[in-house]
Length: 215
Image 1 (cartoon, rainbow, N blue to C red):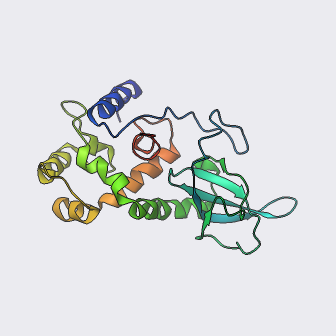
Image 2: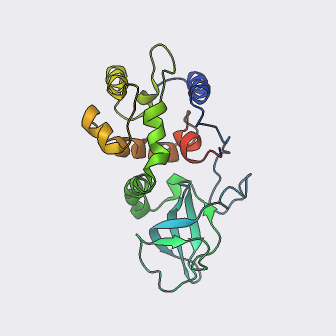
């Protein structure tokens, strides 16, 4: 595990070497129901995939979900009695749910936690071009550390193999990466994103740089 200061330097190098990456300087997440420093950062979310439905006290129900397109973990009051199970996608402007608020990974229910990886993977596959940029533009972050090594289970030798397979033309879809490199590229990226949700303090954040940046 690299030290925080070293990884912070790698983040700057990653951003500098890739014009499509820009940090959004995300504040740390607070407890459920707290007011976040940037109260507008959920305003651009267009839908929520429900991960779990919970009963509210003293009445009603709420959902825990994954927002789109920026993949925030959120909660919202359910206003539509027809929403009774998880796995459904609800538009944020449909009046079927109340305002969104962020929650921490550790506050997810067991059902939400078990569903989050598949939900993130679904989000990646629904907008692949947004995420393929990482594989096509990832650079060396230092003499011994490549950005591909930010992915779970990828060491230096595997990263160098991936660079060689990428060549100068890059990849146009995840299936090409999987075939040439022998990995599940979309799932590895999803696992990285989920790891960052579990520990938002661990730099560099690909969620911030790839998914939540405003270019």
